[in-house]
Length: 304
Image (cartoon, rainbow, N blue to C red; front, side, top):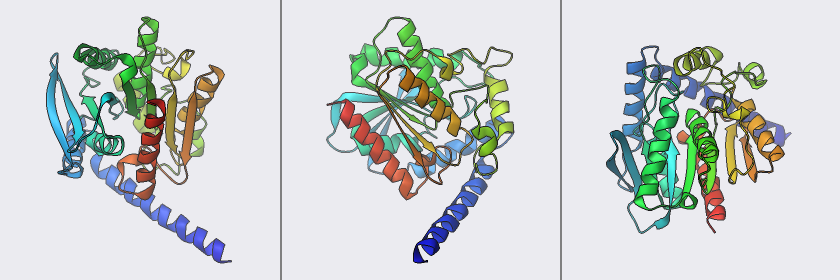
């Protein structure tokens, strides 16, 4: 009996939390894309106001980027290259501080984030080209491919996968590993969770996804692996760790990617977080802290 009451309490608490997330997200999301971008940057600035982390602006051949580092002695051999989310139409290094700060703090590694060009002003392949520019910048600094862990959330997870596919196609060395948080892998929206999680997801809905697809890949072949990495060939990919929320419409995007990696004999691990939503790692909740610790564990394991 007590067990049932505890479960009910937890469920109620989670429902209240998801309701709050839905309200906060509704305040940020705006059909006026400039206002949407501005709101995200404001959130990033507020949530990243900490003395424990320092941010250093850099110019990557005309593209804005920033280094995120902990204010203490930390590991210099390895570096994290983070691709921010935002449906390829919004998001920035500033907004991504909600994640890059946590990545830097949990791993004690430097994190590089970059402002790739956004749709609809700059549709595909602009973001992938800019991702390659950031990668080449690290190589010019003297890092080897095996010194870089590639991370990404949502559309940034898509970009991390597309970038790795591009490196593979060009016969170049691949990153040491991939960490993907709620990756958007299939722009055809053919996953079952688009239906099964439609009522639960407090962050995304099909109409929003459709707007992002039309902005990023208007009139294009959506099964192109550089647009929907789910349809790529993953043989030879580096070790990969995927995190996804149980209550998001993109759940299938992660599950099917995981299955594709297994079939390609890639070392892959996926954790589905009960009751969580799209890129919940940004939120100040216990599950987010646990998830970032898991990210750090995975990164330490592959850097041994």
